[in-house]
Every structure is written in C-alpha cells, then in structure tokens.
Length: 323
Image 1: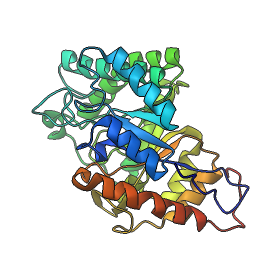
Image 2 (image 1 turned 90 degrees about the vertical axis):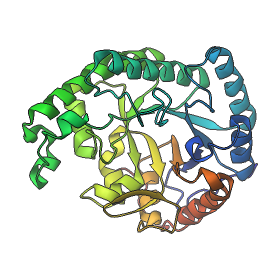
Image 3 (image 1 turned 120 degrees about the horizontal axis):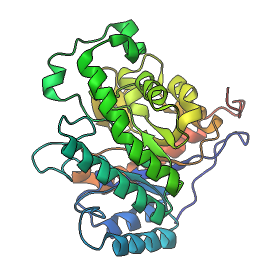
Image 4 (image 1 turned 45 degrees about the vertical axis):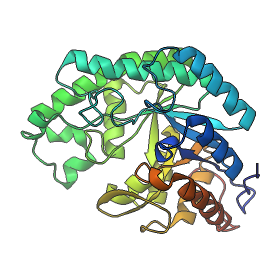
C-alpha cells in the first residue's frame, strides 16, 4: 500500500483521502476495500446499502465486526454514509425521509440513522453522514421559492409548509443526536441541492433550531459549494471549518448538480485543499462519484493521483492556521 504524499507546506495538516463505496456498487464490499487499500487510499466512505453491510439484514452486528477487522487489517479509516437510494423503500429514492408527512415513515428513517450510529461506533468511524431529504411534494407545491435574501436566511421565508418541515427535521434528528452523543460519534449533516437543508445557511439554521448540540456537525460536499453556494468552494471550507466532520469531493459546474470526475467540471482544487489543510481537519476527504459505479475501479484509480497532484500544488508560503 502506497503512502500519501504530504502537502508541500509543512505548516499545513496532511489530508487523508477516501473513496465512496456508492461509486463501487458493482463490487463486493471486501473487494472494494482491498482495491482502495491497494490504490493507496487512507479510508472509505461506507454507504450502508443492500450490497454493502446491509443495516437491515439479519446478523448486522457480526457482519460489522468482520468489516471492522478488515478495515483494521487494510489500515483504512471509515466514515459511515446513509445516502443509499432505495435501502428503505424500493420505489422512492431516498424515501422515506426525515420530512415525510407520515410519522411512522419518519420513524423508519430515524431507525436507520440510529442503526448507522451503532455501526459507526463498532467500526471506529469518524462520523455518520446524513441529509434532510426533499420537501414532500404536497408541501413543495405550496412553498414559494426564496429570494436571494431569504436564501441566506432560511428563517426569513415565513412559509408554513417549510416551517412544518423544519419542525419535523428537528424532532426526527433529536433521538439520532442523542444516540450519537452516547456513542461519541459526530452526526454530520450534508447540505444537498434540492433538499430542505440545501446550503450552509440552512445548516446554521438547523443548528439554531436544535440549540447547537455538540454532536451535530457538517458534511461539506465541495462540488455542492461550486453548484449553488454564494461563496467559492475554498471560502466555503474556511467558513465551515468549526463544524467540519466529513468532507466529500468531486468536480461540478455552477448551477448543475451533477457529480463529475476530476477535470470535467469547473473547480480549482489546489486552493480548496489548501483551505481544508489549513483548518486542521483530520477526518477523511472522500471522493463522491455515485453515478460512476459502472467504471468504479477506473475512477478510483484516477482520482487519488489527481488529488495528490492538487495537494502538492499548494503554495509553500500558504498559512497553516485557521483564519
């Protein structure tokens, strides 16, 4: 297994790169982990799914122990991700969500997340990733699109449908955060384009609604920053630094939520990695290409050298402290 090169500037914290199993869906989990270790990755973003450590199938505790031993043998770190498309419902992508009108359906998603926290604790994971889900269709139809000022301040929308959705989200996350606190595992919520919680401003709104619990952290997707945040990706990293618990990375174009291989989008990666290293972030930065599983080994092999080159391009005079 190769050793990842360190950033050029010794004042910057070395970054640790992983690859998401949702981009290796055609491989057995054991084969995917072996591939990533052979390629020199530091870890894996493990999406709990029917083919990769199914959280709902019998014997999950024993299977988790087996995966934990395998990760340890291969020297791979892990973050547990919960974005599997159809793990709960074979007909609804990412359904049911934490915003579902049916309390029983919301409870199914809560149960999945609590299972994920337990699995993460048994794996020694850095964090558990999750997202809010989209506003239910009946409510989305009544929601007015926010103007620019409202987008920067979700609380300013004053939309009853969205108010109910935020209430459901906060109520649903409370027992998950309790489980995360008990397990000592951060819950890293991801702003996702098209979801209720879509931006960094939305994440901060959730923090305020929940009372800023210590277990609540942030998953920052660098491509999403390029897609829709008002700040450039490197500035998003600096702004998000105090709450960063998990990072996903891929290329993307402004205004288009399409995860692209590195070099196919618009992101300038050396400044992003410089900003990330300067924060002292120590968990995994995971390549997120969920629609490229048909050629997953190829893109896994291409992505790590690209990130290493981008890390080596960090200027030697860059500051190594958080702004």
